[in-house]
Length: 259
Image (cartoon, rainbow, N blue to C red; front, side):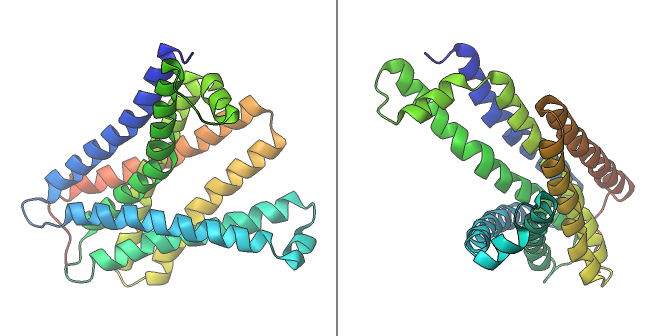
C-alpha cells in the first residue's frame, strides 16, 4: 500500500513548485502591469522554449550515442563524456531561452517580459520533470491502493519505494532551477538590449554548463549523500545570486525599461 506520507509528498511536489511560479509571476507583473502587458504570453514563450529544446536535446543525445566514431573517441573517458554532453545540453538551453528573449523584445523592448521568459522556462522544467511524472505516479498510487492497478511491477515497486523526502527534494530542485532561469533571463535581456547578443547567448551556456558538470562530477566522484548535498548547494548558490540580481533590479526600477 502507498502510505499517506507518500500521497502528501506527491501532492506537495506538484503544488509547491507551481505556487512558487505563481508568486514570482505576480511579483514581476505587479511591477510592470501599469505600463505594459504581455506577461502571460511571455510565460507561454518560456515554457514552450523549454519543451521544444528538451525534445531536441533528447533527439540529439540519441543521435550522438548512436555514432560509433563518437563512442570510440570518448571511450571510457568520463570527463570527456561529461563535457561533451554537458555542452550539448547547455547549447539547447541557451537556444530555448534566447528564442523567448528574441520574441518578447521584437515590438516592445522590455526586461520585465524577459524576466518572465525565465519564469516560463522554469515552468516548462517543472511540467516536464514534476507535473507529468508525479501526476501519473499519483494516479497509479490511487489505483494501487484501490486494487485496480494493472501496470507493470517495476512501476509499482518504484512508487512503493520512493520516499517522501525524495519527492520534496525533486520539488526543491525544480524551484531552485526556476529562480536560476529567472536570473539568467534577466542577465540575457540586459545584454541583449545593449546590443551584446553573443554575450547574451553565452550566459545560459555558462550557467547550465557549470550546473551540468557539477552534477556529473559530484555523482561520479563523491559518495551519494555528499554528492546530493553538493549538487543542491551549487543550485542554492546560483539561485541566491539570481534572486538577488533580479529583486535588486525590481526594487531599483519600479517601471519598465524600454527603448
